[in-house]
Amino acid sequence: MARAASIAAFLIPLPTSSEVEAHPLTFTDTTLTLSTNGTFQVDLLYDLDALALGAPLNTDDAELVAVLEQLSPSEFDTRVDQLQRLFARRVRVRFDGEPAPFDVAFPDYGTSSTTDAEIPTVLGLTARLTGSIPNDATAVEFFASRAFADVHLTIIDAARDLKFQTVLERGARSDPYEFTAPLASPSHGETATQYLRLGFTHIVPNGLDHILFVLGLFLLSARLRPLVWQVTAFTLAHAITLTAAALGTVMLSARLVEPLIAVSVVYVAVENLLTDRLTPWRPIVVFAFGLLHGLGFAGALGVLGLPNNEWLFALVTFNAGIELGQLAVLAVAAASVGWFRKRSWYRQRIVVPASSVIALVGMIWAIERALGF
Image (cartoon, rainbow, N blue to C red; front, side, top):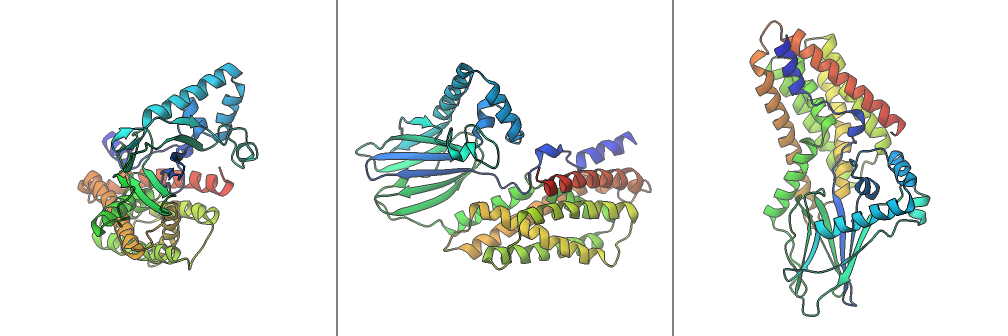
């Protein structure tokens, strides 16, 4: 029994409710502007309150504000100085391979964007780095350390009225942006790799609600055919709404979609507790929930956007990455408990406790998302 419980614990991730955000396709959104007056400006969007206090990004914003407001003026200034040094150490803007010095400021602090913000904050979300472009520079590169999430980088070249966008993996340096060379579009291979990875990481490790939903499908039956029917229905459904939302033909508020996705997690888990057979309506219900999950995927993809010239190809590869992520979840689940699925005790020792945990976590998410926590 103890061994079965440990297997169930391995099978199901157990995040606390405060650690789970809905569909977090998380980036450090960064804009590097090359001005015509020979200066550069980098705006990085980040939770500066959390960074200043060394707190996790999922810490309650009101708690962060309370701690910062209790600091004495000298203690607060020390935190700001440390934060400025942190950006100076962990971010690089290189011209022709050489790092350029820059000043660090937090322009949101003390403005209406913080004092009147719906989400409480003291320092705001923008770290601004400013410096001079060397006179003979021919190319620029950007780097942020692994302390930051993947970087969604936009380079604005004011002199040529051009805008270039790319995604950098955590801790990666951008390719040189040359000031005089024609602006080349990413190759098919680069686009495929980028969006496959984004789709995959949206499931593993970031899509905890999708992981639990897929695990709920896996737990229902020891036979392959019922699982294939359910996963196929789910895949077709979310592919439909992901495409429709990307085309702009379907628009639903995340305030509605996200709680319902959590409800879908609860539903499959509770049904696992009530029956050990695939009911005739289960694939239909799974298809309906798949439509909701597709809208969740689309909402996350909207954070990044699709390339104008290859949006369909990028959309297909993003969806393929999602499928690879789901297959990875199923593969891990099968490797973890697949050996025991024909044992007489499998349902009582694995399915029931695992589904109970899934239902509980999904219920917490549904309540939190409905109440806007």
